[in-house]
Length: 160
Ligand code: FES
Ligand code: FES
Image 1 (cartoon, rainbow, N blue to C red):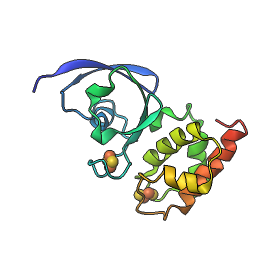
Image 2: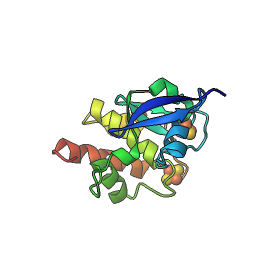
Image 3: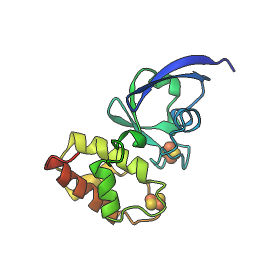
Image 4: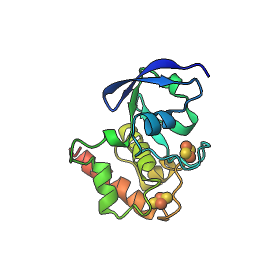
């Protein structure tokens, strides 16, 4: 298959990568850039574990071709923290005990980040609806919703 060099901006860093036309964004992140925080659970667009933000919008990286997001702003879980300082959503997931196996967590957090940017003070029902495309097999969701509500509170008081 023909390969070509394509340029990507991931977590504020520029990369040039030799790609094939059928390479997905999750493959690009995980296998070529070493950003394995983004998970690929179903690989079929059904679970949300591979969610990353492209130009601020959540997309399923397992179902998105890398070539389609050339030169766009890609943000994945590794881009949320600042050095050792975690993002409020990451802190809130830890504090609420919203992580068990952790496989769904990066996708949940990226989806929640986009949701809170659009609606900084959501109700519990709005959080539930906003995370509707993200499946968790472990937690029963209550603690995940607690975490997002907690992060919304922190962020509305000026947290990062
Ligand atoms: S791995 Fe992409 S939706 Fe499940
Ligand atoms: S913590 Fe295991 S799938 Fe959500």
